[in-house]
Image (cartoon, rainbow, N blue to C red; front, side):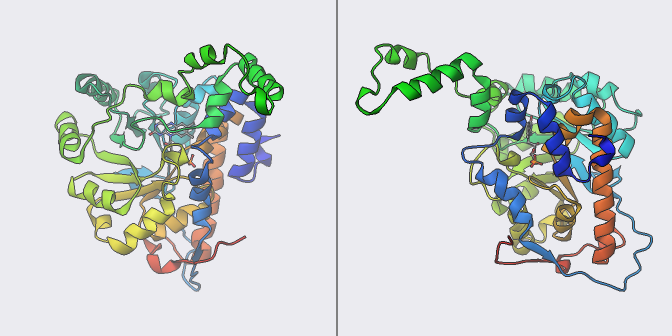
Length: 384
Ligand code: FNR
């Protein structure tokens, strides 16, 4: 359909699904096990209702904010997600261009499908900020070289991802990675085998010996990560290697948010990797809610962001009411660039901007500072 017929981020996702390969769809959309955390990330937002204020002068509504000191047109940023080229030949550059034209900030994945230099060169102006998502390599020297490269290319912050030290179990992704012949074989064997015959083929044991890789796309990407990071060792190490702001991506509970603040991080991104890592990890919005109630002081020490399941302006506003500085989105940007290239990226930012401004006005908030905890309430029933 014409890009101008897209009304919301869900419709953009539908278009992407219809144009990308099965493998790309499986990689982008999948999550761990039964995908409970992926689904609940989104559903969690629906348990929060607004206490809207009226009779406030909101005619001159201003949805802009700053993230780590960098201006952003709306309180939304791109959460780094790997392999944008699976969906569109220009890949991550589409997102860089779209984000630059719309004045929001892109976090670039360590596993981007273009080089960090190509992405930096796709900025629409030299001052366009870019954040760098780091998977820390188990070898410190290799990790340091990557940080150095990001610095030299002008990236403006390091988001250290800590929730993916080993790959999660994404079965739809694994299955899509097997070639068609394998899939057919499995299906056939499944039909032949009934009750007592199972397993009757002499070579099933030999076949079992070949059973090594069930990791899918993610397994190949994360193989060399440092599985021994600690607060005490890794944060001071990172501080000694870079002057850039350090944000910890993948905080999944209140206690770790507190530790990150104590470790002197510049920010945290409450995230469970879009439900792709630990299944039954708490939905990000619930973690933010608990953090706000139990440790409101944390929000004064560092910036707090969340990602996972946010798809509407109202989702963003709820998180901001609870103290988040901005909300990240991963899949929506992959889908948008897959469907319409950079134009798709601009389009979803426009949609979000419209939803955010309208929501702020109806909620009685002229600026993002007017979004306060009293404006949002968690209900103990799950709507619909
Ligand atoms: C991701 N994510 C991710 N995170 C990260 O730190 N490094 C990475 O390389 C990737 N790669 C990646 C690929 C794909 C296909 C997805 C969907 C996600 C996680 C990402 O940054 C973010 O946390 C989630 O995508 C947020 O959830 P939503 O917005 O996709 O629901």
